[in-house]
Length: 218
Image 1 (tube, helix red, strand yellow):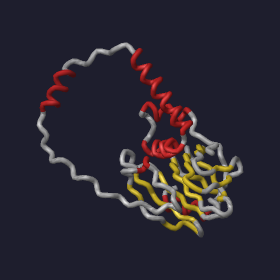
Image 2: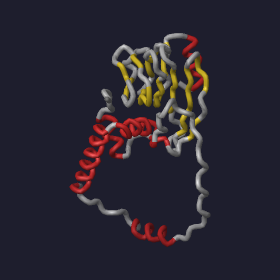
Image 3: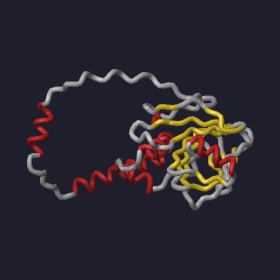
Image 4: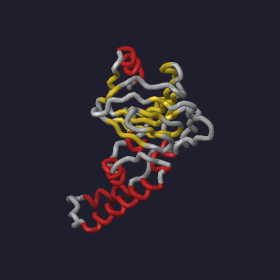
């Protein structure tokens, strides 16, 4: 059962193609496994299409048609690009599948950030500066207490954590900002893996945590 979902403030720009690529891969990963949000997204896309049909046409600028024809007639001078090399990605626990929304994204291997905690950096092709991470945290472990300098989007792939506001389990989505001050604690008996977008540096309470966060770009 999925209990926490992205709101329309994220689904609407995703439907319109205006959501940044870093945020979009996290929201899209949620939609892969959530029929409720998938149906909601399709509804918003249909509404957007209907609005376009009702929009009054706008005349093209001078010479637009001629320039389009010239581009169509222009011979290709670049050889076709070779097929992209197959990308490896960090292994996920058990039978957890690699999200389809991350296909084409580069990824590092698991890197140590503390006892029982690992992270992997995800490179998003259309937004290379986006801070997107996989976080793998062992049972009973917790992230240091922190707040945020901007929006933070988290999609739980497996396991569960409790941050004092709610329990977030497999498939759940969380959006946090500077108004949220929390400490996610992984529940006993399970490893938790999350996909996260960090819009701005996290503000950790402790000095050591702040140093480690700055070192890895969080």
